[in-house]
Length: 179
Image (cartoon, rainbow, N blue to C red):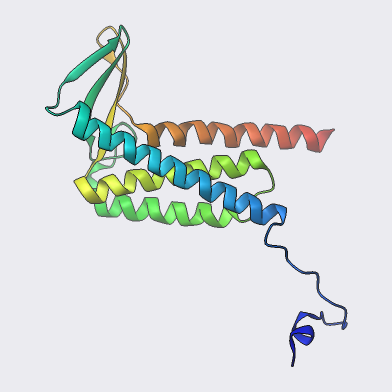
């Protein structure tokens, strides 16, 4: 059996070639590039905070409602789930990221590719922290008076923004479907 035989469909007609630069393939690679960029930006920001800014750890007021404050979060959102430990939380985040990567292979819009990639990158950035430090490094502290929103980081920001982009993409798709 030669290459031409392998490429033929059941009726003997040539099967369509899959172009490596086809839109779904390009969107997959776009999503992976966004994931890598988010993860690298997250890790670079944490490196800068830990080695250049918060050495020694302290609170650095920048605006009347914002400061840099080093926090190690052993849990997930708002510190929930800290009893599970870093390895279980990392395994869950990795499993979710793998599922998202499979979804990324199926996306059909640039917005969705960027959003799914951003979530993957944020999840991987926080997994790296959990495996290195046993907790996620957070440092962005927004507050009003004495009420402080839980500190967060670049990875957390990317995840929240990208979930919003997925919601936006679903509204756009629904509107186009109804048009």
